[in-house]
Every structure is written in C-alpha cells, then in structure tokens.
Amino acid sequence: MRMCSVLPLSLSRLGLVSALSLALVAGWSSVGTIVYADSRGNAESSAKSASDGIPLSSAERVSVRVPEFPVLSGEYRINDDDTISFPIVGRLKVTGRTPVDLERVVAEEVRRRAGREAQVTLEVIEYKPIFVNGYVVRAGAMPWRPGYTVMHAEALAGGVFRPTDSRSALPAETERARAARAAADLARVQANLARLNAEKAGQTVVQMPSGLTELVTPVEARKLVAAQNTMLGSRRAAFDARIKSLERGRGLGEEEIKALHAQVVRLDEQLKLRHEFSKSVKALNIKGLVRFERTLDEQSRIAELEERRTNVIVALARVHSSVSSVLRELDVINQERTASLDEEILRLERDAAQHQIDVDSARDAYRKLTGQNVLTDNQQRVSSNLSYEIVRNDKGAVNTFPALPLTPLLPGDLLVVRLQEQPSQ
Image (cartoon, rainbow, N blue to C red; front, side, top):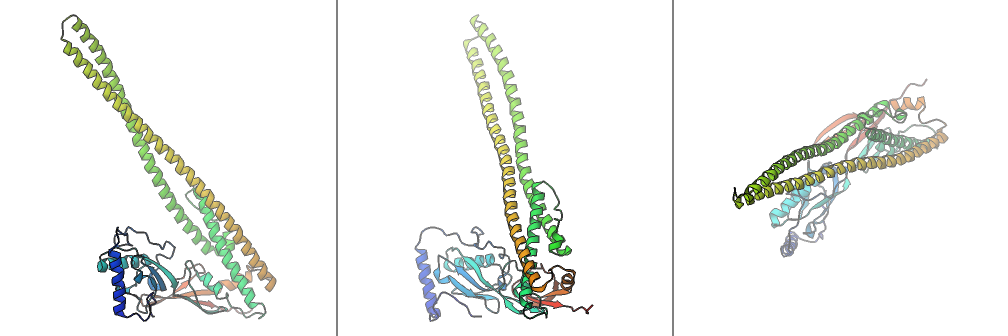
C-alpha cells in the first residue's frame, strides 16, 4: 500500500529533510516543556474508545497529529508489510502495537532525533473490512466497526438467503435480521438492567431476567448473565474496597480520639494535684519556710501542664474533624452511587423501550410480508440449522473456528454462513 502524508508529492527527500529541519529549528526557539505521548507515560492518549486495544495491523489508514512538528502530521496508509513510513522518523513496524503503543514509539523517535519532546496523537480512520460469504443475500466486503458481531455482519449482508417469493424474499430477510438484531440489543440491555438492579439491592448474583430466552437462545442468555455477574463482582469489589479504606480511616481516628481523651483525663488529674501542691507551697512561703522561687517554679510547672492539655485538646478537635469528614465522604459515596445507579437504570429502561419498539416493528413487518411469525417453530428449526465459521489471519497463521451469532468480529475476518437443508416433511 502507498503512504498518504500531508507533504506534496513533488517534495523530494532532500526537501523533506529541509522542511523538518526548519520545523525543528522553529521548535527549538520556543519556550517551555511539551508533554509528549508517551516515552514517560505522562500524556493521555486521545483514543479512549473500545477499539484502543485492537492492533494497528488491523487498520488500513491512520491519522497522526504532532502539533510541534506539522511536517509529521497527516494521514498514513499502513503498508502491506504492516509498517508505516514517516518522514525522517522512517519506517516503523505496527505488528502487535496498539494506537497508544505507536504514539509512544513515534514520540520517542522524535525526541531521540530532535532532542525535544512532542505530543503525538494517533487515531484510526479506517479499519480493514470484514468479508461475508455463504448463505447470505449479499456476500462481499463491508466496513468494520467496534462491537460488530456475527449477527451484525449477517444483517449487513442482507440476512440469510432463502429461495422464496422473489418479490418478498429480500425485504422479509431484512426485517427478520432487523428483528434479530433488535432482540439481541434488547437482551443485552435487559441483562445490564438485571445487574444494575442487583447492585442497587446489594445482591451478589445477577438472576436470569424473565423473557431473556425469548429474545436470544438459552446459551446466549447464560453468556450474557455470566458476563454481567463478572461485572457485578468487579464493581462490588471496587466499591467495597473504597468503603473499607474509609472505614479503616474512621476506625483509626476513633482510636486516636480515645487515646487523646485519656491524655486529657491524666493531664486534668495532674493539674489538680499540682494546683493543690502549689497552694501548700504558697502557704509555706508566707510563713517564710520556703523561698519565693519555689512558688514560681510550681506556677511554671502548672503552666506547662496547661499548655500540654491545650495541645491535646487542639489535636482532639483536629481528629474529630477528620473523622467527621470521613463520615461525610461515606455518606456522599453511598448517595452518589445510588444516584448513579438510578440514572443508569433510567437510561437503560428508555433504551429497552426503544429496542422493544424496534423488535415489535420488525416482527410485524415480517409477519405482513410472509404471513409467519419470526419465532415460530419452523423459524427456530431453520435458525438451528445455521452454522457460522470465522476465518482469521493471526500473525500470518490462518485459523478457522466456529462462531455464534454474538461472537465478536475483528477487522479482516471472513465470516462464512452455512445452512444445512432439512428434508421436506
């Protein structure tokens, strides 16, 4: 593949070097330190989407922005050998690297060559397409998007091909695929809602929502619930760890309060005895039996005890304030958690209602076109005869493995849809 950059095609290699040199000279004249991404791991990557962890070898085109060196900014196409050719920096291998990894590598190369740090931002513009072949209406390539599953690819290919009435086959399969896709989305939302309600109720296990197996197969329903149970355990563990940390701080503060109260009691007892002894010394001084300096010495000791008591009282007030802050934070955390769960539940309930409308709409349209319900026994038998295979090129090795409708697809995957015909009954 040919590299696309921001430089004019007529720019020679010498001109390219000169352009970067001018950019570097201009950069050296600036003042201040630029945080770059990220040979020191301090700058945040701009790519925060769910596709961050996908290797760049799955992409076809990327966009690179380096504000400090505009000559490096532009769109680049990933070559056939899984490399990207940058001006001056040269050819960099992308195999096994994510966008964040390559940001760091480019920043380190710029720093090494230019002696100056730079902020590098890399975004994937286009991934390799996925390919659908077999028993579908429209076989071929289609763009990949994060989150695509076998079911999405089947729907984009027009659904499963069935040689019925040519006037209604394509629209009917489109509506059937739309109903299946909406049902899968609704099932995911219902599983999420079950987990949120369990979390709000303080439960440790997500129960299977009623009606979930009417939307997806029992196997897929169990997988959805299992995934939500894993998420519930993770979120609960994080929340409990935070609460335990604050409770531990509160416990330490309360123990310190007890110790400081004990100090105040001891100091009060000492002050009482010292005051009584000071009165005796004053009486002896009046009779001329002790010097006046002894009276002053007793008053000084009383002042020291009173100062120590004051310091303990101040420390006691400080610890009381800290414990109160912890209690307030505990209260705020619980309130915020409840509010966040309520807000998320409300949002998902709206999503569920919309997905239910989509399911009902697609099923009604399918029923009008075919005279059958989408989930009749016959349709379930046909669906059970579908099989899916994914052909994936993994670092030069071609692997073929079976898949389910909710199996995720990666860029470059080939999905093969097969249908085993049943003998007529």
